[in-house]
Length: 554
Image 1 (cartoon, rainbow, N blue to C red):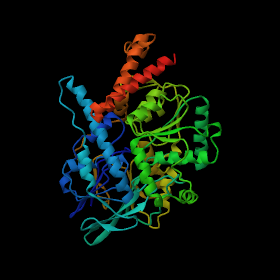
Image 2 (cartoon, helix red, strand yellow):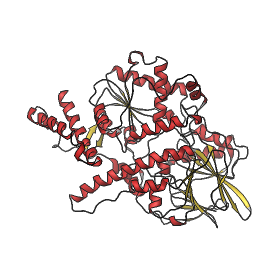
Image 3 (cartoon, rainbow, N blue to C red):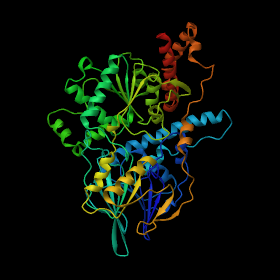
Image 4 (tube, rainbow, N blue to C red):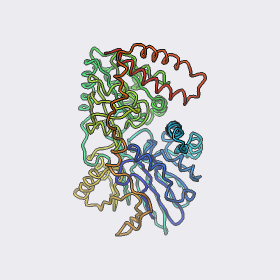
């Protein structure tokens, strides 16, 4: 069996592995690369392999860095089945449609810029129609149910505790009368997390493909980071600021709601017991409803709360923002508040508007509760950027920036090692994926020291035959992934220009009155505009409103 790596090889995102046998060809995952514009361009590259010959895709979970290129796969000729758990299938129904909407909107925006230069239109990576078509190919199976997907390949999902529906994918391949088990970890869940049970134990595997996102780090315990988040919230609210939590719409948002419900139910928010909490993400709103439909997959603590009549994803002061107008209105509410918004890495979505309205405020806090990939805006902020570019404007970073990585859905070093330690029959070889260089190297060294198991770290495009002593048997003709420097350059904000400053408006009351009038008129245009055109204009309204708010506060 040949195993090729078309993503998550010496990088965290873009999960895609090609398994080829004499009789069948399957993929494990088909995710998008994330990490800024440089990585976005990689998503547009054609698949290097013959898509039409792929019999099936085994999907470990619904996160876009594992599922996001599925519509592109069908666009290029895939017609097989996509095998996933029921919860993963349900989440993909909303997540892939949302991703397609983003692709279309970004393409429309880029095309308008191109047209002004008489340049060709930009095609979206895929469309809503592509997403609808790929959803027809999903086949749902239960956890712990070995199921044949081709004549010589079967799959079994074991709960990995990373997100709702996520699973270790045990791939059983029969060649020459012998069955071999290849286990793909997908993403391994963190331990003692809200809502979800801990990762289930693996019994055995011949070969293990193991994620390594936090292969060189340790998470704090539950009580430590619960206290840390509570302290940040109280300190920020007492300064009169807003708490901004960039959060993945699926998984992390629901965990944040669980924690805030815990604070409220136990009277831990002191004078801010009634603080408003905004979930500003249509995708997160829909995902929360799917979580509620699958409460049977939750952990014992959650089930105990439900038995007592306490729904941990509902509490007083919780407000959902569905429309663009709802989202914009949040930033005109001067009351201190908590805002949870997507995307978690800040590369897209409404969170960028909230960052633009709060990064420059010294009394606000930005709290990261999930992994931030190299090249992403979130990573830039964690790395200490003093200025970032948002919607064509350079924004000063004056807010306090926090990182609570214990809320990550990924296991830390101890959790990853525990996957191996608890196996009754350990693998002959381990392949490390889904990690940056430091994490990969450290985890490989720990595995060598503790278990003395041969560990491999493949590169993008490598072809392996794990049954051989010299496993790397070739390499696909693929363009190298962007370097850290290239990713950082693609996200860097240019030096501010002396003109175009919002301060030029200061004091000109006639202009301020005219802008306010325009703001009101644009808000009434929705009936005569397409949804996409209206949303784009409302983006500009948001910028105008921010300028007005700054001027009113001078």
